[in-house]
Length: 298
Image 1 (cartoon, rainbow, N blue to C red):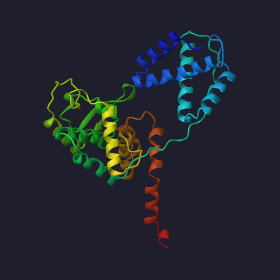
Image 2: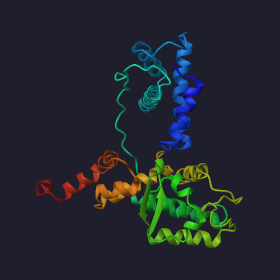
Image 3: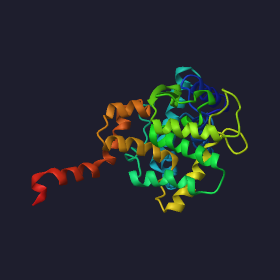
Image 4: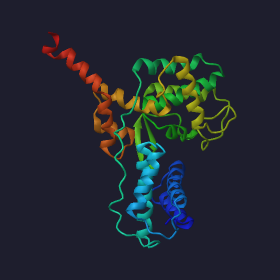
């Protein structure tokens, strides 16, 4: 079963070898805690080996709680990773767990927004209340998400010494993976405008984007910004900071961008992850077909 010492060793390994971020580690810990609570709730002894019956009971318990299939899939993956680690490091006598599989989650299709909505979203920042420099800051952050396809953590992880932005920007993504992304002139100008008005300067190693108190800007502040803009403009609920990254990829694909190049720009390890955007663009392909095929004009 799962002991605190084994769990700690596994999480340390994920942090050092896999270079997972703290949010991911916290989620994996919650996954194992959920399994441990289930085992305790049904009165199973702590030294009882993992069995198919016990595992299936946990699956049924999660389904009865109406957890999302993606959540169930991640929790099973966490449990499998934990036991594999314990077996390889001889922490536990782990039998063959080839049968340990999660239900197949539905294929998630990224949600993006239209070009007009993206433009209106960016322009609306300057109509809000607040200091001019914070508006320019918010505009620069969203420009990096939409114009360069950065994750919110990547944009907020930039330092003052990264500016002024050149034609290329070196980004450290998930798992410490490095990639270079091209920077549009409009993005570099937005960052320059923000820095020209920002009243704080913590030096080259300070965060590029700062709060109104001079502290590093947090992800929650950007999320609240999008929530407010979404309400003001009556945009759908899926408009979030991450949806701007999806929009970046979708709009590139719609305008003839190469799928492999988009994979590199987004920092996806697998092309199959990027291929989700081909489904997003189906409406565009259908419209092209209807507009150009001779038989569609009957």
